[in-house]
Amino acid sequence: MYFRFATAIRLLASAVFFLAPAIAYSYTGPGAGITAIGSVLALLVGIFLAIVGFIWYPLKRFFRARSGKSQGDNLGQQTSERTNNPANK
Image (cartoon, rainbow, N blue to C red; front, side):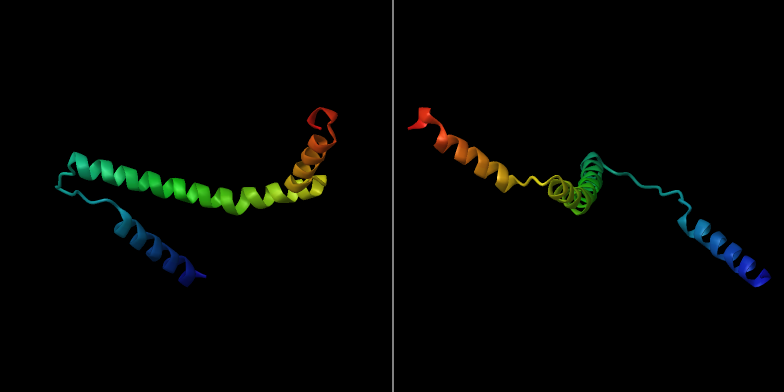
């Protein structure tokens, strides 16, 4: 028990030491800063769209199948309404 606790404390201390920010005496110009911000935003939007694609669209198909409607059924109904309309003949 003591060995696990001591190992966890050492691991946590190492992670804090290596992940703690250090002073960086550097200058990021406006071009590099805007590029970095744009890259981070593009990454976040890509992750968001991947989540939407993998979660929302299958759920949307599931709910559409559950309700008994599909896009093809709607299209067929609209087409038959147009051909059966006396004003179109």
